[in-house]
Image (cartoon, rainbow, N blue to C red; front, side, top):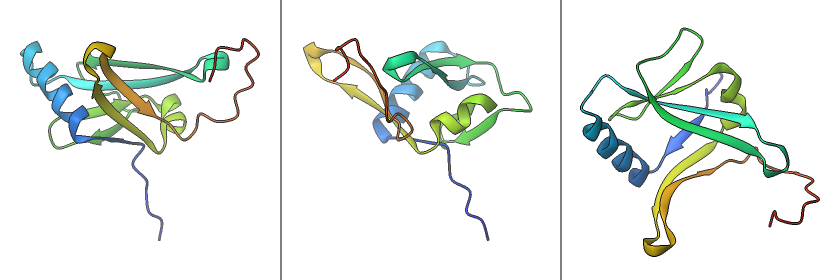
Length: 113
């Protein structure tokens, strides 16, 4: 028996924030599209935006409040990731992605910490 792993998990705060943003869009048919592209020494570059639906090659993750749609090239890059929304007051607010696949970067610019 094979247990299929969900590519990404959203925290309650991330779900609440996406739900709030979707409500402000006024279109309950939108989905959250998530992608990960190679980004050099800084790891992956992430893309989160609303989209009108999924294609046949997309993976769909149901949150109960909305669907998260991931393109086929990004699924492996995102496997096991946790998406959170953090509001740190004056320091800023935004989505944070904890991705276990971002390891072993060899950066020589001295800016990665």
